[in-house]
Image 1: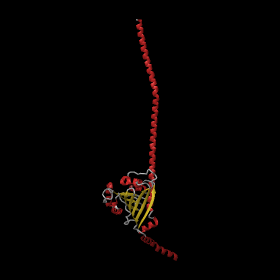
Image 2: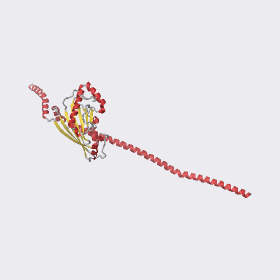
Image 3: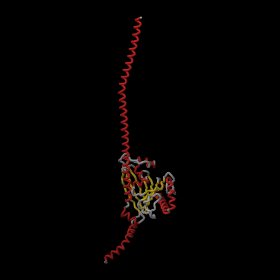
Image 4: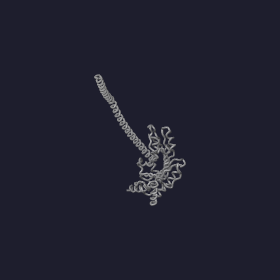
Length: 350
């Protein structure tokens, strides 16, 4: 009986101490960290660059994303100032709808202002004077949202992705209805950046061409003619986790590599799907070319046979015409001879 009472008292004392102990351990852990992953893909520099910079297609090949809202795109050739409107000019109508919705919902308005402040901080950290277009967008996951500023520092070679994650947030206008709608957390669970360094085993002749035209890589997916090209992608994460409890969970349960590994896995699947689709298109085009060539050969063969038949009939027709002409000429001569003979006989009788 004493042992049972002691166990109950011990559990009452220990259970509340567990979160306190985890919190204290989190305080002892460093808030910032730097990790990196490197992998290789058999594709072209243009192809992987297009995938990484086409943010609107992210939900198509990243299953963990519930939705994405594109907020703004800043071109370095235009005004370098941050627009007061988060929505791009091309989405002006949608921006007006979002503004009216924010007036009705103050939580959404505060959330939008938070995105603006996050974008401003990201722009200062990214080194805006380095040039390169910037894209501000919001990714929605099962547990919250991620505000991202994508900076194309060196076209075709280097991308800076600055992020700020918040759990249990109010979604923006146009976000999927499946995302959480509980009040937003004031302190981000994660803030930091990913740096994508792209290199190739080929000479950088193509890359030097890409640097001269920043937007030439967005038109169509491109694959290397030489399948021996190998792209090396290095992702470096520099992050800060301010919450001690989250810090311990990342250290013991999730790991700092989890997000990078999942992203690279999804990227590899996307590249393989694109290559398979491209191969199917090439096979279909080749099949169509073969069909057209076969039809052309059949047409040429039929024309050749018709010409041969015509050439064979021509001598026969010539012989017949010659025979008819000879027969006509012989008939004329016979008539003339008869006429001459008749005239001669008349003169002889006289």
